[in-house]
Amino acid sequence: MSGVISVIKDRQDYNNLIQACEISKKILRVVVSQVKEGNTPFEINELTKSLCKQYNCKPAFFGVKGPKGPFPGYLCISTNDEVLHGVPLSKREFKSGDVVKVDFGLYAYGMYTDHCVNVIVGDVSEQVKKLVEISKLCIEKGIENAISGGWTGDISNAMETVCKLSKVDFVKTFCGHGIGKKLHMDPEVLTYGERGTGTKLIEGMVLTIENQITSGSADLYLDKDGWTLKTKDGSLAFMTEHMIIIRKKQAEVLTRI
Image (cartoon, rainbow, N blue to C red; front, side, top):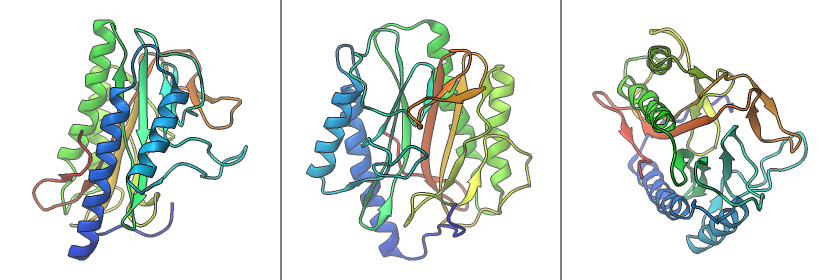
């Protein structure tokens, strides 16, 4: 992380953040609509590239440094057992039954965005539909506990509780974070933890809340591309992520589409 906590301190910063998030939502809506049978991650990446040019914004993930060079995509596309950071250059067509995580962020008006949704392609089982809902519920419960005067651990514990009650495994090695004038800022928002621990939440703090759950084990391995994380047992993965601003009574959610 950056060592700097992102807090909105004035109206101009707030307006800039809102404008950046509005563009980000518009782009993600279009992108999600094209994740369907017959299309490919490569085509989705090209569409995202075009949309970023149309809206005069910079893709947040493109060029981020990694162990095997900079990230080559304009967004992350992770399909089925791919959990996160999927490189969107595959020309494998989406097919019915696929679970696709679409993770997108941009830089505009001096602010970064970062959010992710699950997209199901065609027909899927009731179990898969249930897991998509659990993924959403984890984040919604986290958001409910994101209140000024509380702690990041309150958010983390809420997400962990949903997973345990739902009897699903979840990834512990990746987490939410502060965001704003940089893509990754403090504090970390873990996917597990105890209430009353972590970093104290203050009004105006900007966070991403995310988690990844799996239909089997959440043990991961890194693909040979140096970016994509996959489940070791080949089980399906699901990921939801939202940006919020901490407020006194209820968090302000910035990235619903």
